[in-house]
Each structure stands twice: as structure tokens, then as C-alpha cells.
Amino acid sequence: MRKLLLVVAVLTLVGCSQPSTPTSTTATPPPTAGSSPTTSTTTVSSTTTSTVITTTTVNLAEIDYPDNPNTVDDLPDALTEFIGETIPDPDLAINGPEDLDRWMAGWLDWLAWINANPTEGASKLEVNMIAGSDQFEDMRSALEERAKSGRRLLGGGFLPRSLTGTFDQLFEDKTALRIVMIAAGPPGYLINDAGTVVSVFDGLDGEVTVAAVLRYEKERNEWVMETFEVLGRP
Image (cartoon, one colour):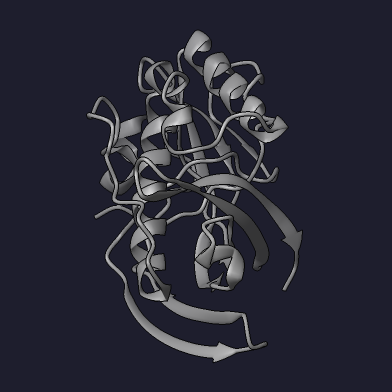
């Protein structure tokens, strides 16, 4: 099954040269994502008369991430299953707190596909992410560079430990939905077209806080990612 990962690092590693043997780095993992079944408990509390915060605890089965894989065959199926597959079509509608886990799992499945298929992914980034920001352009450039160099990015990103949404007047007016995640980060792997692992990116040490803003798409009745950023340690 796929791993639920939030992708939040921005793409400084995509232009690196391709070594003949795998290398390891402690740099922040580049973006990629996937999902797995989760069991959740939800609590709701009101911080003001107009703001309701919902916190969902996400329990995740761990993947056995290899330290020094040689080829794509050495990676767990959960990280490779999007390669060559049809682009996912997740349900990104959000009507309330109970929809956050499903939204996140679906959006991250789509983003995992983007990174596993960069040639197609570069032209599909606008499907579930709003264009125009520097972050969007950086992500598209990264995908185009990987496609040109024949590389795919698998794994990496962040493992959410808790997910919080602000369902206030901005959400009710369909203006914006703000979400915050406490997350850890697993390793990531860069592979070439021959299936050789050319780089291994170490996971995060500890947890970080990640914030994101979603915007409403009226024609689709869905919420789409606009921006996300790492705020620091919780």
C-alpha cells in the first residue's frame, strides 16, 4: 500500500550530476508523496467564535527504507508503484474536518505520480496546484530538469503525525483553507531511466511543522494546493 507523505521541500537537488554509484546526502528531501490506509481520531475545539480547529492523529505503517539500494528493484513496492501508471484523479472536495485525511491522501498520491513520471508530470502540475507562485515555477522547473536528465524521484517528503485545518469564515466563504502538519521525513531516492539508484537522500532528524494554503476551485467544487512551507521545529 502507498505511504502517506506530504511533499514540502523545494527542489535544490534536481540539477545535481548523475554519479555512477549511489551517493548519500543529508539535504532536506525533495518533494514526492504517496499514501497508505490510516486510522484516525478527531477532536474539535473552538479558539474563537469564528474559528474551529480540527486535529487528526494519523497512524502510519512504516516502510522498510533501504540504506544503500543499487536499483529500483531494491526499493519497496510502495515507492515504485506510480511509475508508468495513469495519473490519479483524487477527490479533493472538503466539506468539513472529516475530509482532511482523505484530501491529503489523494493529493499526495497525485504528487507522487508527478515525481515518479516527470515527463508527463511537468505538464500536469496545474491540475492540482495553483500556478503563479515562485514555488510552483520551481517545482515545474525541477520536473522538467529531471525529465531531461532521465531521472525519477521516489520517496522522500514528509510523514504527517498530525493534521490541523482552520475552518473559519475564510473557509465558509470559499476564500482559503489553512492547514498545519507536524511531520517527520523518510529517505528519498533518485533513479535513472535504467533503474539505477543514483542518489539517496537521508530522512529528517526529528519532526517539523509544515503550513499550507488551499484555494477553492468553484467549477470542480474542490480545494487545490496553493503554497506550503516548513515553519521549523514544533
